[in-house]
Image 1 (cartoon, rainbow, N blue to C red):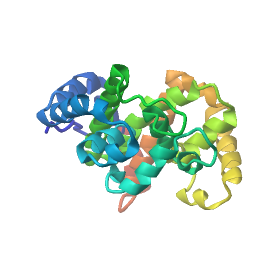
Image 2 (tube, one colour):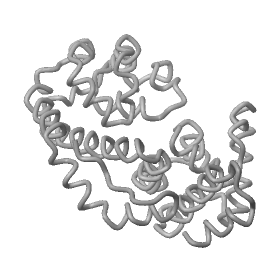
Image 3 (cartoon, rainbow, N blue to C red):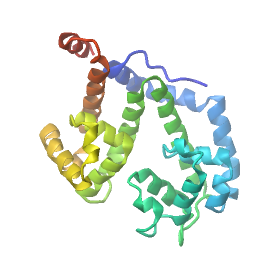
Amino acid sequence: MYQPIIPDVGLNGWRFLQRTYDTQFAVFSESVVQQRDAEYFRENIAKIKNAEELVGDRRLLTVALGAFGLQDDVDNRFFIRKVLEEGTGSDDALAMRLADPRYREMADAFGFGPGAFVKTGETTFTDAIVTRFQTNSFEVAAGAQDDSMRVALYTQRQLGELAGQDISNDAKWYTVLGDPPLRQVFEKALGLPASIGQIDIDQQLGVFKDRAASVFGSEDFDQFTQEDVRQDAITKYILRQQVENLGGGLSGNSIALTLLQS
């Protein structure tokens, strides 16, 4: 399978990946493995009418989960079945009680919940899932070389969409707190320790908003609809991650020189 080319680490690697993304993604999507998985999904997903049938077909489930960045759950079939069967129509539904918003997004997309409309027979649904699967698979492949590239690509794709949603400012920040890749970016970009996750969730919200006001000039999440602000957040994340990776055994001057060269 084609492996994304990332010739350098940190900011240099990220800038190269951005410049070559369209070409590399096209080559990756046309690889034999990707085409085989996409074709199988297109040919068989319309036959699936409920969650039990979906989790019973590992190849279909792999694509379905991969589309939402949940590929690590492929062996948690009972859990995924519950997420899908309960849907998103009730606050008590499992997907609605989970902090990670990707489960809600998946449950809503398939429509297996009570009173929902099953979408597996729709061509637009199939196309959207396949595209998302290929996009996320590329991100995972990039992450196999440098995990910060996976996180950065995911953030570049998701952050603007979240910022543009018609929900409250706090709801957007709570989504970040529950979304592992986005949370990772903001913790690093805002200079917060991972241990902040141990305090009360409402306190976390206050800390993230206060620090965002200090670092980005505003706690208003709508600012991330702007490309330059999104890239600023991603750049801060990558640089802090690079510093963290370089930290072991290097002097402060060596780290500073490396970052300046980036």
